Image (cartoon, rainbow, N blue to C red; front, side, top):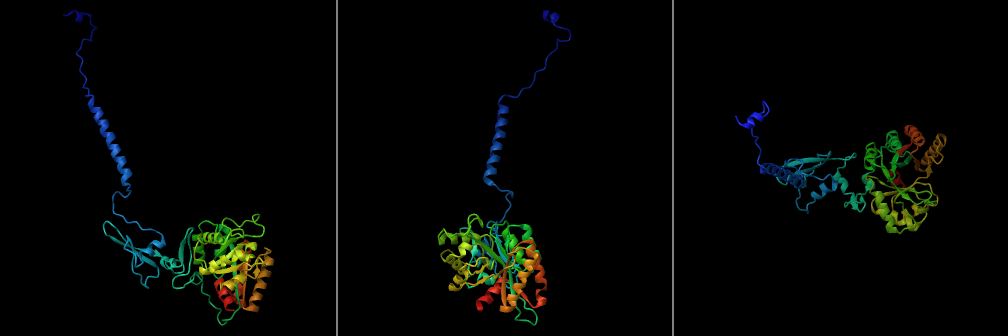
Length: 386
């Protein structure tokens, strides 16, 4: 027995097993492989950017002008091509989407607007400005004032019944008042929208779907500006004609399908021929009508419109100048009397709850009294013819 054996503690004299250790190069190789895999995956994600996993797909613009441009005969073929239209498809315009890789064809229908016009048909009445789409006269001479006008059904047996046109202004900025006007007033009442509300395209489309003609209220300078400020892009007597026309285009681009424009405030602006004339000429050039809200006795709109052959009318009575139920009822009585005297009368009111309630009440019984409620486009046509 060796000396070491005698000195070793009892039970500790055992042969120890050797541990197996990976060569030092192996972990480094594994780590390098994982890092390389991550780098490759990240690079593929950045370059490929394909959320559809490589599946074939076709992309089509939702802009109405894209579909129309693609169907123009003198343009080259594009991935979006307009399918032939037939009179048997009043629900909208059909376009054919062609997958540029596989050649697969798919038909897509662009829905018609509430009055039955497709996006393609409406596009001919629009042009692009730096602010967006604005109205224009179509190449065939169709004016927006004619295209978006509502038909009038005469009172049975009374083709020459006195006619009354009522316009409600100040809509689009208050959801509650706007909804009340759309829902509570009959279709022949014309609704005028300021250019400042949100979702104006959606709101005005709903107004038209319930039978209303619509007008654009254009902000114009009052005498006490800027203490009274109509809002951004107001037309001013202190800027030149080009700037005012550009501001007019901004307002025009906020929504579409209106038959004309009406002043929003603007006592000082409408009293200046130098300021107002270029604006009215631009409205006429774009096939729109102009309504003077009747609030300012100094307005020159009638004289300027007559000199430029612009379709024009003026509200002769502001129905809620005194916004009480009794005063509004009396104003409606004067409006009806004026219509019986001259055959036609135009009234203007704000979107006050009391105004909407009293006008709705008056309108329900108007026909039974032999008075025909008409949209503003009809009133203007008759005014011009007389």
